Image (tube, rainbow, N blue to C red; front, top):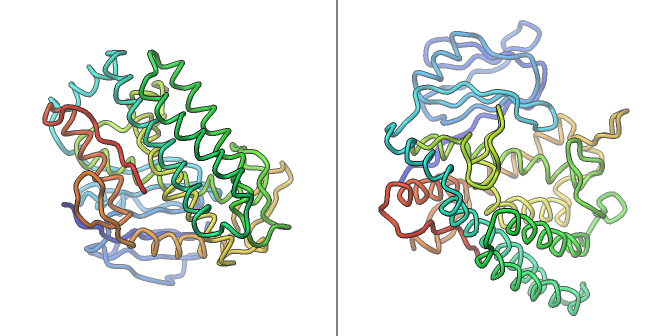
Length: 343
């Protein structure tokens, strides 16, 4: 199994990255403020628009270190990558499956079943841990509805039906999301999921987490030789990482949503670390991004036992492990794609 290496996050928008031998040089206003060795990095993520030198870009491409450029609110802008791993036969088979409606539907059904299953168990965890502080009947009803939706996803006969089941399941799940927030209610109140841009503090945190998780899925897919831009459920669109968006569905509730709820309930982040722009968009401040990413890195290193592989691995390795299982299915080594189902 691949080893989880470090990700270097550059959260300040005025930082410029250059190369000195085997070391990244970080500059601000032309002055050097830090150095980081390249040898133990697998990814560099920058939030802002200052950029990086061509020499560093070339070095990252050569060494297989992903260099990702994100906007201040976590929106993907571009990435520098080296040669694609794997072989063309795997990718050709991926493209065949993506064009085969029946087989693409089989993969998508497993992914959405897992998404709804994981959403249900996120609800169940709150029910178990905070039964005295929530409306237990409401949560139990939500859990039962999600259980039915998860089963219904496996019985969908076409992609439109599956998308309808997913959308209905998401509405059920988010109907109790605000009840999972037990602290800082005045500043962190959830009413409805909104994005592009997020309009409130909770949605800003969720969008940022989803962006980071999607980047992890993109890297995981590319590292096993799959094309992150050709998906099975999300349709093809220029510049859209459709397969990464497919894969991230499995991790939204157990990795991203639970992480955001923990940040709020444990008061690890406060409203002072978010700001509202003139256009109504809410984004993390520079200090907020730093707080968020520090906790995110710690979360990625936590361990769990993978339900299908039956071995311990870090949460940060899940996108890679699922990409590996998907590649095995596409190659014909598995009878079906086993999605990540957390409990």
